[in-house]
Image (cartoon, rainbow, N blue to C red; front, side, top):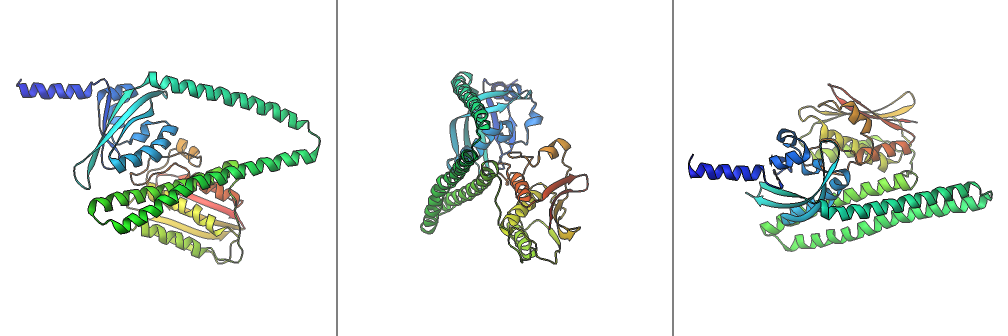
Length: 388
C-alpha cells in the first residue's frame, strides 16, 4: 500500500469513526452523506438516513425551531454555530447535541451544507432541570386549577359564573390580539425595508440576498397566519366565520385554482364545477380551506397525473373534493392527518409547520361540515361535505 493510499484510508477512518457526528446536506436540504458515528448514535443505518432532511431527525419542538430560526439563518449567512437540538433515536428516545453548520457554495445554483454534531449531555442537563422545574410549576398550577374548578362548582350565583366566563373570553381574545400584533408588526417593518433596499440595490449578490430575505418574510407571514388560526381554534372557541348569502361559490373556487396554477404551472389541475345555486358560506374561509387542500395535493400528488377538483350539490349537501394520484397513505398516517403539527414526507420546496390540514378541518367544522379522507393505490381524495 502506498503512502497516499494509507493517508486516504486514515482520512476515511477519521471521518467515519470520529468522536462526533458528521452529515452533508444537498442543495434541496436532504442528507447525501453521513458518518458511522452518527448512525451508531441514532441506531440507524446509512441507507435509512440518506435522502432525509435534518429536521426529520429532530423532535417536534426542535423541528419547528429549526425551520423558523436556523434554516433561514443558514440560507442568509451560510452558517450557524452551537445550536442546541434533540435527535430522535431509533428506540424513540432523544439525544441532546450541539450542532454547527457551514455552507460550501460550489456555484450560484449548487451548495453543500456540512453539519457537525457533538453530544452535549452536561450542558443540556441544566436545561432539563429547568424544564423539570417548569413542569412541576405547571403541575402545581394544574392542581390549583383543579381546586379552583371544584370551588366554581359550588358557586350558586349565576351572575358570578357568567362574569368569570366573560373574563376568560376576554383574556383569550387579548392573547390572540397580542400574538398577531407582536408578530406581524416587526415583520411588516422588515418587508417595508426590503422593498426600499430592492429599489436601490441591483448588483447580483444584493439581488440574490434580498430575494432570499423576501422569501423568508413571505414564509413567516404564512406561518403567522397559521399560528393565528391555530390560536383561535384552540383558545378562542373555534375559527370564526361570517356567512354571506346570495353569492355563487364557483368564482371563489376558480380564483383559488388559478392562483395555484400560476404558482405551479407544471401541474395539471382539472376542474368539474356543477353548483347552480348560491351557497351560504364564508367565502374567504372556504377559499383558505380549499387552498390548503389543493396545496396538499400539489405537494404529495404524483407529477405525471392531474389533480382533479369537483364541486357539486347532492342530497342537500355542498360537496367539494380534491383528488390526486400517487402512493397511498398508510392507515396510521391517515389517522393523524388532520391533527396539528403533523407532517408527512414533503418535497424540499414545500415547508411549514403541519397546520394546513388541521386548519382546513376547523374551517369545515365551523361551517357545520366535515372533511373525509380516503386513500388507495389509485388516488388520494379529500372531500368536504356541508349541509345546505
